[in-house]
Length: 155
Image 1: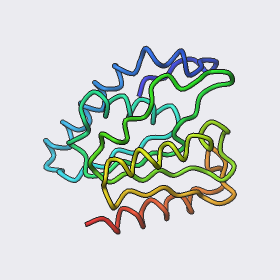
Image 2: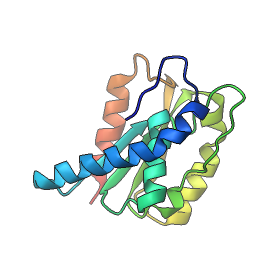
Image 3: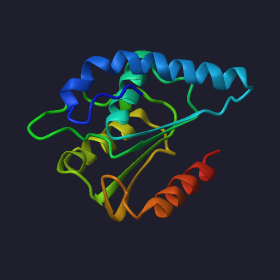
Image 4: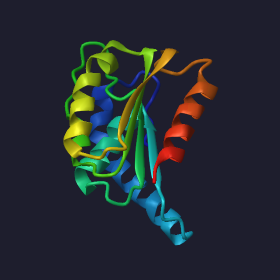
């Protein structure tokens, strides 16, 4: 995904979201050329904003599943500019966030859940990782287990 200087904020990244679309499309095309058909897109924090822009643009029909980690993070006094199109995503969605995640991620959890329910995929799930912060510091194994267990539960 496009990366700006360390001081860049959420609003600085918004104009780059279309560039992310091109990169996700290229990654999917590469996987398909390799014969891989079950494609899961996983994205964290600002990457989730970029992935959701791609879903809004394409509908996400090339995905077997989507994993969003810490979705909704913005910088101090910066509001979410584009609501997540989780209601447009017919594939299963796993929304994982930390119990000690950023306030914006926590406050948007009910909205994300409602959008996933509106999409109607019964395999979509929202999970809170206990004691985890936004970066899942020292919770990597627990996060990996949550994602792997969910992926393995899919038909």
